Length: 139
Image (tube, rainbow, N blue to C red; front, side, top):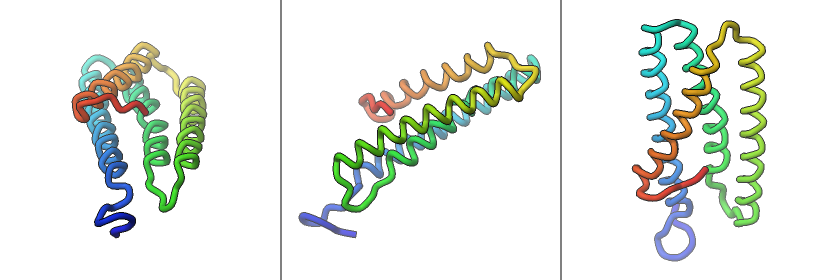
């Protein structure tokens, strides 16, 4: 689908960025599963809480990345920026509702395991973005 000047394709860079971001999320999902599996040796509640902590991080971020990094034909910079802001607002809303649901519905729960995994996912996101991209891409 060659459009515009020469033989350039629209969205090539955003497609590469999208693939990198989703590769980072895949790495994080695997890390979360490995951590939760290892914590099964300690306690089922701790392992389940770690898995929930990873999910609480990944699900809203996957939504944001999917919505914000989807290329649309003839999208202006103004519309793209508005979409980023709207995606971020929805991401925060999903995060708030998901945390509330976990704390209301899941008993027993290990909050140290839940928040520890959530924080670990955030740190690995920063490190993986710097490592895979050779620069910091902030979402």
